[in-house]
Length: 313
Image (cartoon, rainbow, N blue to C red; front, side, top):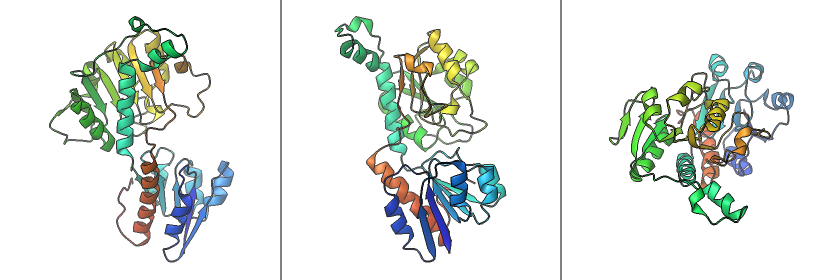
């Protein structure tokens, strides 16, 4: 008997997931979100399989789940899971990166909004009744250099979109050797120095925590646009704030924050050349369904002895 727990999920089709999983033989499925660490442990302690989105699966959880064999993470990011301990305990972890196009489109939307200064323009018209474009800066995208940090599935789609707009594309990824012919692979520092737009597409790890901080900002062009649709911890928000105060950065687009969802009092909210969205770059009706059905398929593969499609460890 496989005991499966679906928890910490914000997706709308959990009951359909449950029905599909229960079509498998010898399966028991529980769907419940935990309100505390203690409740989470009590919920999953006997589970063979955990399917989650937001739950923190840390060392304590992993060491107290003696039957645990598989964790399926909805979506691409998996920094909520202690991969090291999971691996040591023989627990397989996989993710379901089923929304690459949505994140790429959101990235480009942020770039356009910042380049054309749409937030500031809307404030001038809506709140101040000013019909005066002379107070609003903007710059042309074509022929600018677009820098992609992390040539992942999403990063490669973003590169194609930028190239299609007539931009020069440079990329940095120490783990990738093969890229599209229109992409120039460069060093990290060279990308920072050359790019007019910089977009981050990396997972949050010890290696990438504060990948963008004071030193990196000091290498950037003074009119750079910085976009982060990956994970909040990849960017040192204090370094970005200092750059904004010193007018070092033209605009910042963030779909993720270091301490999300606790953003009250964050000084970045005070800048009209900072555009912030609530971790929604992945979102579409199709994405929610594809993520959930993809998670179910990974569980089916595991139970039937097939190779996992997106294994992390």
